[in-house]
Image 1 (cartoon, one colour):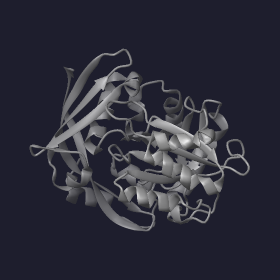
Image 2 (tube, rainbow, N blue to C red):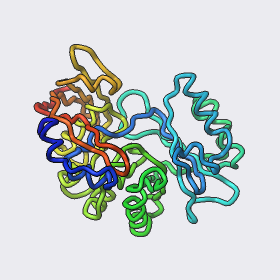
Image 3 (cartoon, rainbow, N blue to C red):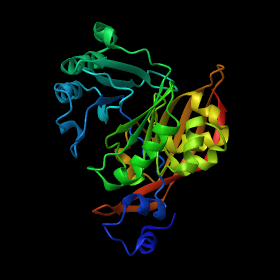
Length: 339
């Protein structure tokens, strides 16, 4: 990656009205490390229209925003996104609520809870789920037996960003028409963060974020087959790991192949002699060490240890927003060690 001055020269001329997704792809803005990492990722079924801020949309059931605000005051890490109604998936008089929660320790998938409940009960269901299993059990009658169903969420939130509407909807339509099945559902969702990576996709309960998707990448992503190297530039990261841990996770994925996605994992990052769990310190970091402990489905244990360095700053902007820069990191050493 070139230094900032050179990148600015390469990015010029820059027009804030150009498409942010196209500019991001052309500028070398690597999406890895950009997956959001809430402990609880919530999806609420709500009809269009959606506001710029989805949570303020008229169709969001009452009690959802208040429940989330109260949970955050208690220190619960939860984020909400929308799920548009679907003629096949939705049920008259009911609303769907997904909560994907991060398990303790090493894990490979988020815990999935899928509910269909009356609109006026949805806030109470969410409050109970975030309070813990005992409280959630009170609403067991609303829970759906869909643990084996894969849920793909494609951002089509055009009110939030033009690229999400222009590039996200065609991707959603193709996935919905060609790939949806009894074991795979495809949903339209609200802004997932990083609209410059449109079209973006969230794959749950795995918890993987994907970027700049195209027809060539879709088949491999959905079927989990072929050379993972072809997906490297589309991978935003796994929501179970921190910012720099996601960078290392991709490198291991390219080395180990598709089997790596089923390994239970836990990551840790050290920089400047201290351990970090949040990304706020990244603006000053020049190098770091990451460790990802793993356990294979067969029970083999071990770890990958990696050294990373700051590799320059990539420009991004467009869709009415000024040019900014994202710090990029690369793996300079990767070693597999015994557990």
